[in-house]
Image (cartoon, rainbow, N blue to C red; front, side, top):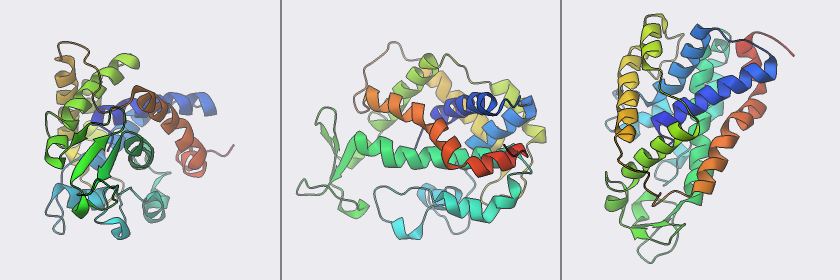
Length: 257
């Protein structure tokens, strides 16, 4: 999935695009509601049916049972829209939640497959987690074991490098205090999969990732991600979302154009 900081920055970029496209000056509370709604799907609030982090994400990210066991499991946005279509006109956080799901969907469908490939014991591509023995980086051909790839020294260090690049490239900062100040007004309009009070934790966690990336001593090169793929992905999320979900965006704005 996209990192917390990627979600935040792309959310801010989308809000700029929204204002420009519709000549709609957003209120600060609308922006904060959207940004927190855009972060809240990654909060931790275990359901009885979900005994693992991935099990929980099945619910919070509206994944399909048909894709369980696959290496790539994308959110099914139509499930969210069908269940909560009446809420878009009630609160900007609902649009933020949908934007998060769309970002992760594009991340899994467009970003990951252009950077890595899962291989079985014979070195052939595989779609299923149970068969994965290796993960190959496409930019340089390096092959990792799953344990080495999904480690602090592997993909998670790459995420830290990516977070640093995103903050620098988009010339932005994480507005922690503004989001904390808005939290007393951040009320769940009826999304049962998450607890909006977990917003406090998600804000602190995002801030910790910002600090971690800022503490990097130098601009290390990416070992896994391709710079061209990063730039392409981040540039297309907002415009594609606005085009694909024009109806729910306009329902949220309570206007028809």
